[in-house]
Length: 97
Image (tube, rainbow, N blue to C red; front, side, top):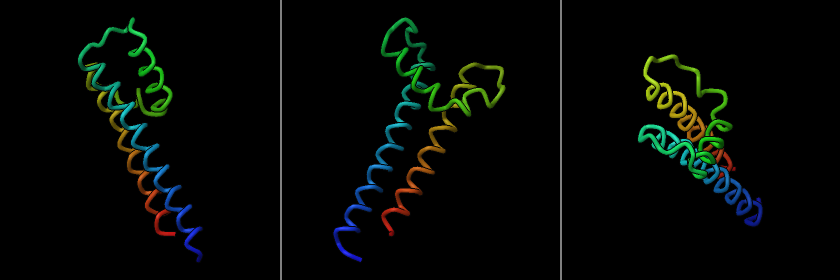
C-alpha cells in the first residue's frame, strides 16, 4: 500500500473524529445551557438548541423522568456519548486501514 493512500486514510479518520467531537460539544453545550437556565430568547441559545434537537432527534425524549433536567441530561447526554463512541470507532478503523 502506498504512503500516499495511507496518509489520505489517516486524514479521513481525523476528520471523522473531529466531527464526532464537535457534535458532542454542541450537545454538551445545550445540556449546560438547559441546566443553567440560559435565556431562550438569546439567538446563540436558540441556535445551539436547534442544532442539538436536530442532532439528538432520535434520543432527546427517549427517557420519561419527572424532572426536566434529568430528561435533558439523559437524552442529549446519551446522544453525545453515542456520537463520540461511534465516531471514534469509525476513525480508529480508518486509521488502521
